[in-house]
Amino acid sequence: MSDVVIGEDGRARCGWAAKEPETTYHDTEWGFPTVGDVALFERVCLEGFQSGLSWRTILTKRENFRAAFSGFDFEKVARFGEADVERLLGDAGIVRHRGKIEASINNARHACDLVDAEGSLEEYFWRFAPGPDHKPGSMTTSPESVSLSKDLKKRGWRFVGPTTMFALMQATGMVNDHAYDCVIRDDVATAIAARP
Image (tube, rainbow, N blue to C red; front, side):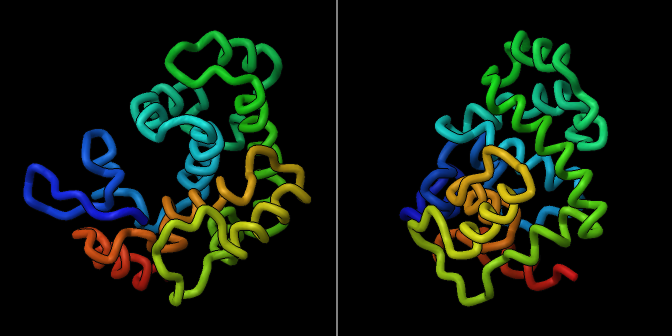
């Protein structure tokens, strides 16, 4: 993780969280354990859409994504067809990238299969979480994100490369990548430790 930045409130945060909407996302969501399969599926999709773009772009369009993708209820998204793809390609409120849109629909179908096979997305994804000895830093992948990516691809998922899966791990609390001097780091560590 890069150096911390001191916000207008005098609090030290991870360097990327200097401005809104990143500051609120950083303080209330990034790194805290994501609970529930729908919430986790949303994060997988948003990380895929973010690939090659700024996170700010995704955050400012997040509510539009939720509306366009039925709240990321993967059972509903799994039923999307070609008419939905065309509808989404015409929606200026989201990132209009055919490959990413089609990947989200594809992944929803495979999410249904994965839940049938593994019990829940949350249970499955957290099996790949690195141990507590993970050190924050400038990593863009990890052995665990590589393993997760390979397993998902074997199951037919798309836009789930090792870098994207590592970003997912950071965002959903599978790793605590807040800078050591970040004011939120200890809160995230406590939340991860309390996860059942």
